[in-house]
Each structure stands twice: as C-alpha cells, then as structure tokens.
Image 1 (spheres, rainbow, N blue to C red):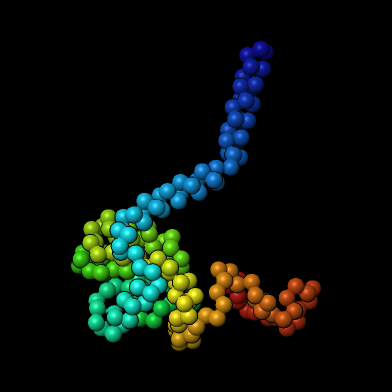
Image 2 (cartoon, rainbow, N blue to C red):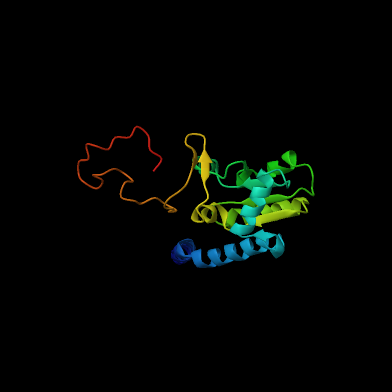
Length: 195
C-alpha cells in the first residue's frame, strides 16, 4: 500500500510539474529570441544595401523608365498584394521564396524585396543571400512607407488609387455601416465580408 501511495504521489508531482511548465509564459523570451534571429537575417544583407523611401522611389522611377534593371519584389501575402500594390512591381509571397531561383537565374541580378513594414523582407533577403544571390537589396519602409509618402497603389478592380488614411486594422466609423453597434442595423447587408 505504501508503494501505491508513493507511486501516486510521484505521478501527481510529475504531472503538476509538467502542467506548470506547459502553463508557463515564455512569450517574452520567445519574442526576444525572434528579434535576435530576425536581426541575424537582416544582417545577411549589408547595411549599404538597405533603401529608404526616397532611395527606393528613385530606383523605382529608373526601373519603370527602363534606365535600370532590377527585380522589384513585394513579399506580402496574396490578399495584401491584390488589395493594393505598387504598379509594375513583382510579387512572390515570402512563404514561396524558394521559387525565386527558378524564376531569377542570374545570381548577380539586382533584387529589391519589401513587405508591409520590414519583417518578412529580412527573412527573404537573408535567404536570397544564402542561396548565392550577390546583389540583394531591402526596401526598409515597405508598402506602409510608400503609402505614408502619398504614392499611389493599384489593383485590378480600381486601377490606381491613393490611401488617404492608413491603419493596420481598419477600425473607422464606416467599417460596418452607419448603425454599427446598434442592436438592429437594417441598413448593413453583406453577402461576404473578409473582416
């Protein structure tokens, strides 16, 4: 009987230990480690190959005028890109960066990558450098920097347009209609809505 009690006490102790480990909040440590890893990937692209909005816009204008050759690649998700992107630029979702060597065969080609702000571009740029590409650049301010500077976006439904007010998540007064929040809103009908 003593062995059974000892065994049950041991099982209780071990299960309590594992439950406390499972419930421990490691989010701060994980976030700090993610920043460290992200920084390592950013550093695979030399600092002199990081463009601010003005440098990127000047390069973009040169490429669009046919005066310079470069792959300008937006690495945001498909929905982000199709909602609005910089006219004339390329798109490869950051999760599909492994397809780039099939599409860009010249290891010395100038490749400029960006995303919404600056996270994904470092991972993609770092991988491209590791793949052996020698002329990788990061446009650091991303599509948000482009928007905030007042430059236009485009998409297949509206053509070219400017974003008048940028929010990561739209929370404006007109998000759900004029009567949003009221118990009955007879004037807001949507067959499908993404948010």
